[in-house]
Amino acid sequence: MLTVHHLNQSRSTRILWLLEELAIDYKRVDYQRDAATHLAPDTLKAIHPLGKAPIVVDGALTLCESSTIIEYVLDQNPEQRLRPAQGDPSYYPYLEWSHFAEGSLALPVVGSTLLTMETRSGQQPMDGYIAKEVNVDFTYIESTLSQQAYFAGAAFTAADIMMAVSLDMANRVGLLKGKEHTLAYLKKVQQRPAYIKAASFG
Image (cartoon, rainbow, N blue to C red; front, side, top):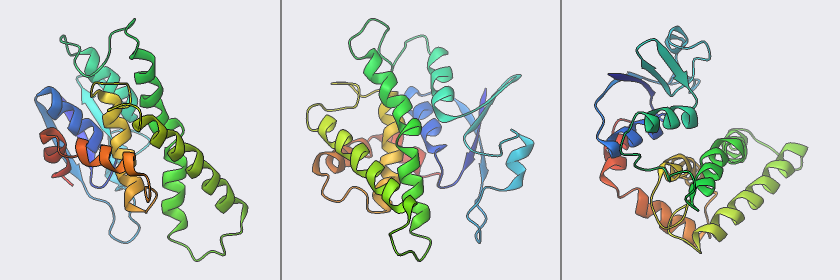
């Protein structure tokens, strides 16, 4: 059975959400962030050297990184749900958005979150860079969701799981203000029963 090492208020919610969508049995091991530093506990390093969540263990295999774990789980699913088949027109958009969530979007979202923790003039190079990335990324997202129901096209896929958790983080720091289509999308996917159950774990 797959074991998910889950850190509260983290991107490991993605893995729990995916497993709930697929109705796959799994074991969950919970970890809590340090109340003062908000960092993950050192006990996670005993599972993986990076000490970050999500981490999954399946027999002799230990993996971290959300998108890799999602692809691994989908590879074990004979029905191939939540991922377009190769050759389907939505396959490469699916891959693009699955990787975009961490490859492009994580930096401005996490950067914006960290900047709110400091008293700043807003004139430093980092402020300008993050503002540029926020504008570019969220304009692209809003444009996409104004034209189609989900990130890969007409159907909900695992790319939506990757993106929606990042968008929820962005919304919490006010990055989705005025993004009507993005907010409507986020509300829609967060009404899915599998998301509601995964989010209940903290």
